[in-house]
Image (cartoon, rainbow, N blue to C red; front, side, top):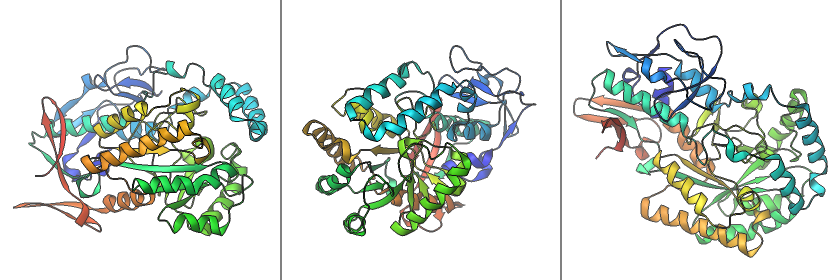
Length: 446
């Protein structure tokens, strides 16, 4: 489990020495770790709860420090995997009605024929009581990030350290990172892409454009070239956007072979599934460098769950860039909001954790003046944060390349200071984790 903390912060492993204190419970469940971190996994000395609701046992009460080691009543790696890979949702899935599957099959068979006005009412009915979900935490869940922060804080205390050096999360000391992505679902959206790219360029922001290879619209070489030549990037979005990619393993393997072929044909290194349906345990078949299919918190998605982190993370060899903000479609059609207030709140919460702010805005759904002006306001806000607070606003592919470089960098501690070694280290910055007012504080080295 020590490696997970060291990988997250890119700090020397000797600073993070954790051990499981006792025999773990047979069943996994929910428990707290401090006042604001809800975990899911097996637990020592206490019985985890089958639901995240109500009063949960606090595992922090059973932490023991001895000789520089910290003994935990749970396996932190297991908990992180359960959350990031959404394995905690498996328990809830056992109660799923067969009617859900029938409803889903029927809906997706007629979806292409339904106007948005009809679709949104059916989808609202499906999402009834979304705001009553206690976990993950709406509108942004940073459970994994706060768990790792608590563990690093415990290391500082147990080893009586003044500080722990690590490699800052983003290049050139940027406080956070934001990426814009456009999912193109219809012919109307495809034909509106040029106008959307013109607006993006007006604010100096490039975006990843996710294209559906089959059935929805014709994907010509001229269309793809029009994206690449402007400095934007092409990603593959599913195969045909029918919502069935992850329904059957054998069918998935047939489809993913075609998806991988389209990726090579388009020169795309990124993938996103339709409607953010996903099964991260199957991602090993994707021949892409990164994926963008996992929501941070999925209360407003047809598939509930969420990865509970605002940072990129590896799923095997593929890097996951989680979707950390509400999609434009949900903002307009479920929440009936036509301002960027929710987006601004999510940006603030993510920046508190120095995380990845990622957006999905569909060219298909911003063709009318009201929606167009909301998107224009969002771009203006991101440009302001970039100019005033040094927010990093790259392409998704650039984030992928940076995160892979950072994962291979190392901190070298010498008598007269600390330096970073590895490819790309000229853009990396040394940072320090310290204790401040009884909590973990992270900051760049002066």
